[in-house]
Image (cartoon, rainbow, N blue to C red; front, side, top):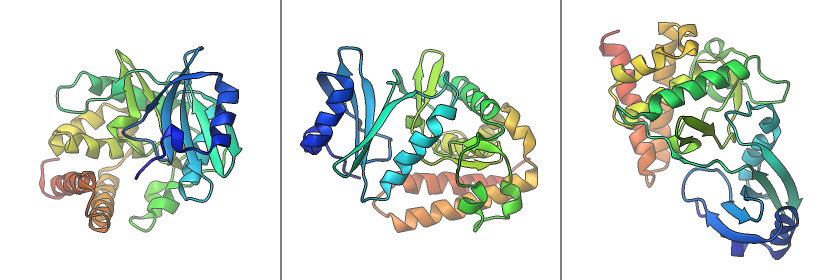
Length: 268
């Protein structure tokens, strides 16, 4: 998806942003992650913000509204705080504290793996029960792929487990881009991350051993794991076939298929 650069935003939108931030000394456009039409780190006299924008006439504006709605309920030690948001000239803009660091390394042996595990554990503990906000239930998103009963739960979930959304700085990690949250079982984020680990080079068995250290994984039955692995493989294959020019979707389809094969034929 092609994003707008700072200079391409309507003048009124740039002026409205500057009214909040003060003089902007530097603009660094995001090159990965983030669902939206504009995403950049803005450096100002007081340090700056990470600014995201979406045109009001696109579906992407709903993703940004999700982030704005859930942010105040997120644990402060995990997610950057929302500073402000505004609507101007057909744009929705939101500014967050800047998350410093780099994208998590999910490859086998990475020192980031326990840091990511700790973040998922803190998220699940802090967001169960789900805060009192209107949010899509997991059954509405996944119910066409597996038994909705398996998706019952009362945890606010992130769901987008790409490594770009885990910003690591030493032993600290911040989880960004809460644009696709849902309410569901606490194990769901762990299951989504498990497939990301396989894509990063882990065997399915290694990825399941990693997931087993998470308290939320103890809540899922083997039958539920099997059903979710089958549903995820089906969805990943569909996304790959509908977006043939997206290599990362082909890689996710391969990883999901490998996990499903392990669940059906590999050791338990």
